[in-house]
Structure formats: structure tokens, C-alpha cells
Length: 309
Ligand SMILES: Nc1ncnc2c1ncn2[C@@H]1O[C@H](COP(=O)(O)OP(=O)(O)OP(=O)(O)O)[C@@H](O)[C@H]1O
Image (cartoon, rainbow, N blue to C red; front, side, top):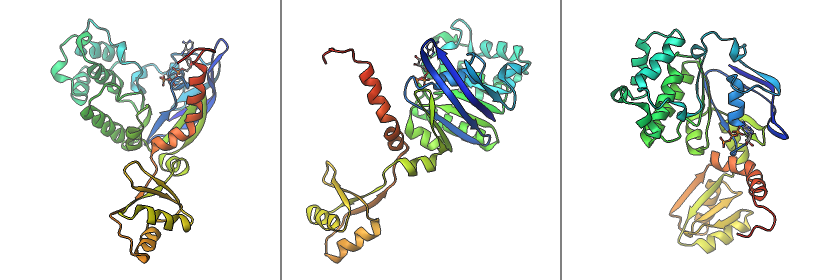
């Protein structure tokens, strides 16, 4: 479990993380979302004891990270895939980290297998692709078989196969009872991987809830209707209180009426329907809806007065 209480980080006048409190529970994947610069990495670094908080504290399984003698056995972290030493092979990189954390050398081969780097293990990590460096970073995180995983954008640079592999790994780790905390920007992937979501905006927590609840509360659900009688159907549904938007391909997006009612109304008027789909809102839609004002504001911040396009 990760417990963050009143965590704050100021850099001069800039508040990177502002009185943040949350708990990351074991047994589920918790997604950590927020626009660029909202404070996710700084929060993760404070949890790992790499950045000193201005105020507040973070505990991992009840203790501050610095209290662990062999931290890799308690928390596996991926922060920056470029942190791999260029001159060393993947094997030697992992072996030296294992030795300093009192982890059996045999574990190195195991994690190389898990991350799919066995064949490249003797090559210099400096020649690795971004995806391979990312896999090596994940190997380091897994080395100590830790009960807590903390990963900053783990799918960055991975191919679709790798993205699916990460998803499976994180789901499996949570099912084993581990605490899995993962920051990311890829909403479609987060929707498939996470059970719970914490959203930061300007250094503050603005959402801390289940993915299902977040999507239900923040995203629009509607019904997609395709019919050769689009305009007549649109008039009919509007007269019954629905809000109808015509999509670029001529389909109708209908809000305010259940799909069953739409089908009945159309049948009553003898209007043929080719497709009738109840669409669930997406995580991306819910996320954009709550963070868009900030994105706009930040874009405005970035444009100096009088600067032309
Ligand atoms: N060492 C530092 N010195 C000064 N400011 C910093 C430092 N580290 C982070 N910041 C600032 O703190 C804020 C939060 O940054 P942080 O990297 O935590 O955001 P993030 O949510 O991880 O962003 P991204 O999604 O782009 O990775 C930003 O305004 C950033 O410029």
C-alpha cells in the first residue's frame, strides 16, 4: 500500500505538487493521470525518496522509502528508461543491481525471460531501442519481486505486442495482491489496465475513484442510429425530447432516449433502422472533459502577449 498525506513540493515560486493526499491500495491497478506538468513524476519521486517534500509525507507499506535496507525488494520502480548505463550489458546491469540488493543472481535470468530480453542480454544497453530500454527498466523494477510496483509511463516506446504484455503483467501483479501504481497518458490503454484512477491537475488531486465510476460520471453516453430516413427520424426523436447530433457520415448521435425507446418510436412510424448502438462514454472523454479547461489555460500561458500565430 502507498499512503500519501499532504504531500507538497515547491520549486521557488512554482508549486509542483500541492497538498496531495491519496492511498494506493494493494490488489488493484491504480492509474495516475494528469496533463503534462501536473506533478505526477514529482509525486512518484517523492514516494521513492528521490525528491524531498516541502511538506507532507509518503509511506510505502507503512514506512518511508528511505527506511528500507533493500528497497528493490519492497518497491519496484520505473521512472526513466534512459537511466540505463550505456556501456554495460543488460545482464551486467541487472547482476550488479541484484548484488547490491542481496538478490540471488539466478533472478537475473528469470526477469530477462519475463521482459523478453534474454536474447539481447549480453549486448550493450547503449545500443538498445527505446522499447528495449523500457523493458530493461521494467526488469530492474521486477528484480526484487517487490509487493509494490510504481511505473511512470511504462508503455512509452513499446510496440503493440509490448503494450499488451505490460497490461497483462500489471493485471497479473495486482491479482497476486501487489500494489500497482502506474502513470500514463494513453487513455485507451489505461481503461483496459486500471481499476482505479487518480487524476492530478496543477499539482492537486481532482479525481480519486474507480475507472467505472469516473467514466460513468464524466463521459457522455449516447445512442448511435443509422437509418436511410435520418432527417425524419431526427425530427421524430427531437419531438420526443432527445438531443440529436448528425455525425459527419450522416449517422445520428442521440442523447436523452434509451436505445429501446428509439427502436420502438422508429418502428411505430415505419422508419427502417440499419444500426442502433448504445455507446458508452470512454475514459478519454471523461478525462478530457475535466482537464480541458487546464489544457486551454496552459496553452494560453505559453503564448506571449502580442505573439502572432
Ligand atoms: N527539478 C525541478 N525544478 C523545477 N521545477 C520542476 C522540477 N521538477 C519538476 N518541476 C516542475 O514541476 C511541475 C510538475 O512536473 P512533473 O514532471 O511532476 O509533471 P508530470 O505530471 O510528471 O508531467 P509529464 O506528464 O509531462 O511527465 C512542472 O511545472 C515542472 O516544470
